[in-house]
Length: 465
Ligand code: ARG
Image (cartoon, rainbow, N blue to C red; front, top):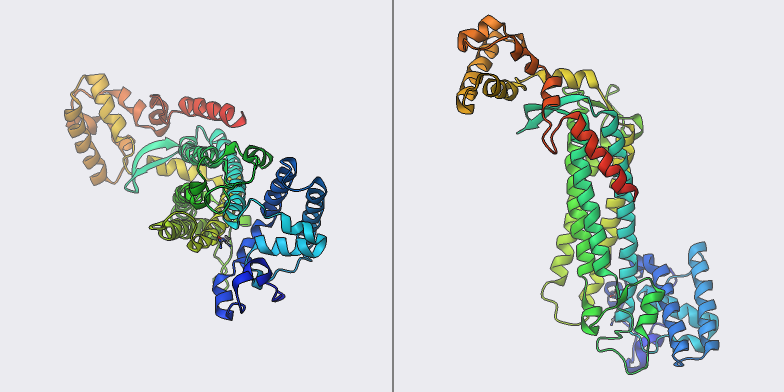
C-alpha cells in the first residue's frame, strides 16, 4: 500500500501537521472498507447525475465524473488501484484518485453530500447484497432438503426427545423440519430487506442540505424504495446491519443444530448416514478416520456470527445522535458474519445434496427402544376403550416385560401380553411395527408419508414462485 501524504488535501485546511502514525493506524478503515468500492462508486455516480439534473453541477462535469469513476472501477477490478492508508477510507481513496484522473470536476462531487450519508449508503448497499445472497443461499439449501425429503418420504427412522428414542418418524419428516426452520430464516432476510431499503443519500452530514437536491432520484437509481425520512436517523441508523446479523445468527443456530445431527449420525456408533468424501477429511495419524469437518465448522460458525451481533450491539449502545466514528467499527462485524454465513450455507447445501441415509440402519434403529409404546397405548384406547391413563400403565408393564426379557415390544407373545391385560388380541401386532406407526400419524403436520408429501408439494410450489 503506498503512503501518499496528500491526505490533508481532503480535510486538512485547518491542520498544521499531518496525523501521527498511530492516529493513522487507528483511524484508517481502507484495509476492510475497500470491499465497498463498487457500492461507493455506484453511490457517487448516482449523486453526480442527480447534481447535474438539478443544475448544481454541469452536465460536462457529471460526465467527466462518470467516466472517471468507471475507470476507477476497472482499476479496482484489475487490481491496479493503489490504496492508501493516509486517505483513510474507500470514500477518500476513490475521490482522490478521481482528482488524479479528471482534475477539478472531482472536487464538485462532494457537493451536498458528506461521508456520513455516503458511508451509510455504501454500507446499506453492501448489506442489501448480502441479504440477497442469504436469501439465494437459503433457497438452494431448502431445495436440496426437499429433494432429500422426497426421496426419503417413506424411510423410517427413530425420532428423539432428550436424545432418547421416542417415536418412529420418517426421514422426509425430519428433513422437512429443517425446511420449516430455513424457510423462516429466509423470510426474516426478506423482511429485513424490505425494511432497510431506504436511501440515506442526501441526508448529508446530519441535517440535510440547502442545495436543491432530488433524493428520490438517487434513491431510485440505487434501487432503494424511497429516501429515508429523517436525516439524523439516516446517517446514524445501523439497525439494518444488526438485523442482518441477528437473522444470520438465528440461521447459523439452525445450521449448527443440523450440523450437530450430521456429526452424530455419521459416527460409527450411529451410522445413520454416510457423508460424501467431498465434505469430509482424513486424519494425518489415524488412517481409518473420515471426519465430518465441514459439519463441525458449520456447527461452530454460530459462535462468531453471534459474536459479531453482540459486538455491533455493544458498539451502537449509548451512541448519541448522529454520526460518531465508533460506527466505523460496524463493517468488519458484518463482513465477517456474511462470509461465515455464505460459506456455511454453501457447505451445508453441498453436504445435504450428497448425503446418503443408511435406510436399513435407520429402520432397525427406529424399532429399538420400545419406540412404538405410544402406538400400543393408543391401540388399547381405541380397540379396548381403555382410558389413556390406564393404557399408559398397561403399556408400561409390557415395556418392562420386554426389557426384562431382552426383546422389543413386537417380539412379545400374545400370551405374555394377555398376562398383563386379558383383552389384548392379535390385531395389536398391526400397530407395533414402525411402518404402521408412522403411517398412522396422519394429523396435520404429522410424520405420515402422505402428510410429508403434502408439505413437500406445498413448499415446492412456494419456493418456485
Ligand atoms: N470511514 C468512515 C466510516 O466507516 C466514513 C465516515 C467518516 N465520517 C466522518 N465524519 N469522519 O464510518
